[in-house]
Length: 178
Image (tube, rainbow, N blue to C red; front, side, top):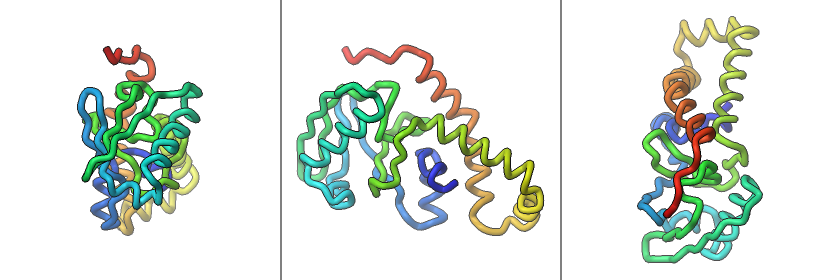
């Protein structure tokens, strides 16, 4: 379940608080650019050119269309000029409810499917736990032991708002980049 929970950017502050580990780089965004901290190159063990190829391949895998990606390296940031900003599919970028973008601190944490699939799989998994693991569920609710309960409660709190946003992005036309 952790691999699915980590796909939801809105839960990253909880991961950071409970695990004392940063799971994703926070990206700055303006109308035409995304600013990615330069530290990501060390974290991913990549050069700027290889990172550009990684983004192109990740985006191509998820949409089967080639995207224009141009990265300019500055002292503190990689400045991403791209036509993917504002698209329905943000892979490999994570997006929270406030439309802030993130990239994982480790490239192997990325799962190449839409965030809405993570929500569905987590809800399904929780429903199976409720139905078939009632003793575990009862112990969890009575003892509050471990880190599971905070993650479950935070996820259940975010699901109604985030799923609405994800379905709107899926069903409504993408904004134009004009």
